Amino acid sequence: MFARLVKSKNKSYVVIVESYRDKRRLEIELKKHSIEYSPEKIREALNELQFSIVEIKNEIFFIRSKIEGLANDILRILKIKIPPTITISADFY
Image 1 (cartoon, rainbow, N blue to C red):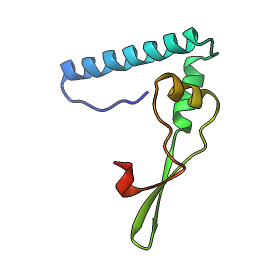
Image 2 (image 1 turned 45 degrees about the vertical axis):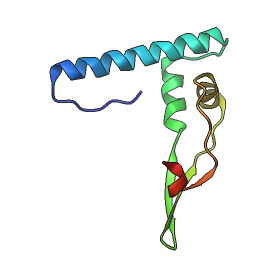
Image 3 (image 1 turned 90 degrees about the vertical axis):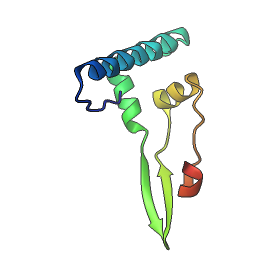
């Protein structure tokens, strides 16, 4: 899960609650689709979702890692479109 540093105690509490809610939603959806998971497997799958940034002739490209297994299931269940393998920075945003 993603976390951000927030100085206010109230905002920190909100971020923690939202993170917990999102984690529970994901676990419920995985269970509903009969996909085997554990908190550690979910963390590893999310950590596998990475982009590399490459600059060629003043053009910036994003190259994504291969998406498979639980990471692919998570994106599919959450209805997140898998980006192309190579994306030009102008198309990324």
